Image 1 (cartoon, rainbow, N blue to C red):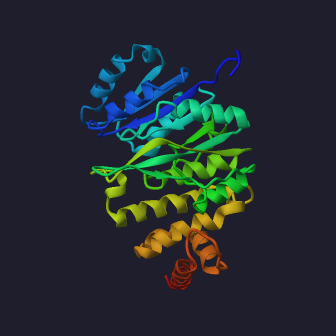
Image 2 (cartoon, one colour):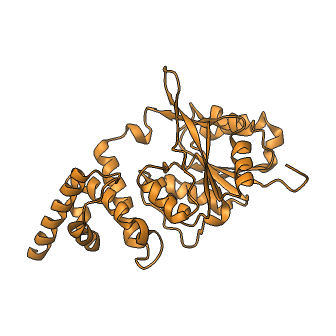
Length: 319
C-alpha cells in the first residue's frame, strides 16, 4: 500500500454479561493482521467476570496493550456504551463489534484496503450467521454501491443494505457527536445510528466476503427477548428519531415515511396506542399517507397502520 502512513481504525466493543464469549471476541480482534488499531472496550457495568477475562486475553497480546482503552461506567445500555466509546475514538475509521461475536483475521485489513481502493466513506461486508451446534450460514449483502448518502439511507430503511453496525467500516467524520440523536433503547438502535451516519456518506461500497461471525440465539441476547418488549422499544426509538430530526432537511426529507412506518407498525401491532399519541405529527402523517410499493413494511401492514392512525386522530379530538 505504499510508504504513506496507514490509517488507524478505532474498534468499539460494548461489554456486558458476556463472560462466556468475550475471550473469543477479544482474541480475534487482537490477532488482526492490520497493525494500526485503537481498541476501545466499554464496560457497561457488567456484573460478571467479562472484564477480568478481557484483561487476561489482552495480557496474552502485549503488543496490543498500548492501543487498548477500557472505559468503565455504570450500566446505561447499549446506545450509551457506543457513545462512550465514540467519545474516545481517534481513528481515521470507526467500526463496532458486539462482544459475543468474533471476526476473521483480515476483518479490518480487508475493509480498510477496500475503502482506500474505492475512496469510500463506508464499506460493508458479508458475514457468517452462527447458531450453537449448527454449521455457520453465510449471509450475503446485496451488491449495492450507492454514490449518494440519500440513496444509501433509503436502501438501509428498506433492507437493501442491512443496518448492522458491526459489518460497516465508517470514516470518523461521518459521526457528528454533538448533533447525534442517541436512541433510548437497544432495540433497533443500529437503525437510528445508521440513519444519521449513512446520510452523510459520499460513497458506500460492498465487499463481497464474509468477515464477521454473528452469533444468534444466545440466551439472554436481545434477539431472544420478549417480542412485545422488542417491538415497543423499537417503535419508541423510531418515533423519537423522526420527532428529533429536522423536517426541512436531512434524512426526514428522503426517508421520513420509512422511519414512521416502522415505528407506527410496531406500535399498532402490539396495540401500544399510548406511545403513538405522544407523537401527534407522526399520527397525522401516517393517517394521510399514500401506500408505498417495494417498502420494507408491506402494503397490508401499511393499511393497518394507516387505519389505526385515522382512528387515533378521531379519538384525540374526543379527549
